Image (cartoon, rainbow, N blue to C red; front, side, top):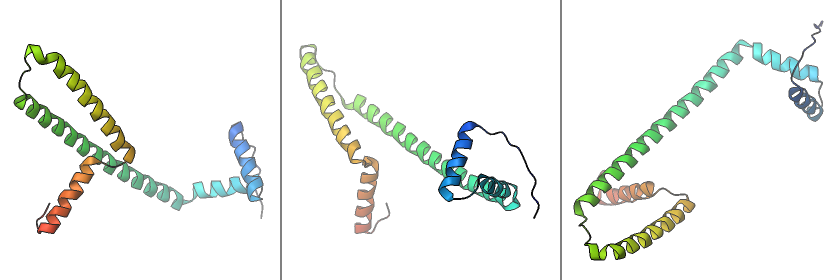
Length: 144
């Protein structure tokens, strides 16, 4: 079988990785290049790459859709909470404002500590509440 001789110029880091791979696999650098070129030129190779790329893009699209949904839920949750808080909270008299600020700092510090513990657990509070609601609905025979 005749073969054509080619002189190629590649980046030094690629040459180093090619040499390491050839040594590791116990094959020649030429055979690795020939196999890579055959794979690249194969009609099935292009289709396989397109299918793989399409799958990755679909997965990324679904992830972005979930992120967008979760972000919208977060925005609505904060907006509802702020509206509720502003509706039900009464103004603090001038004489009690310093004590209210101190109490607010303490509560905020406790909130941040609790948030840190929750994030370290790696669970989602929304997911936990959703699962609890589903379990309650299944127990009572309702749909969540």
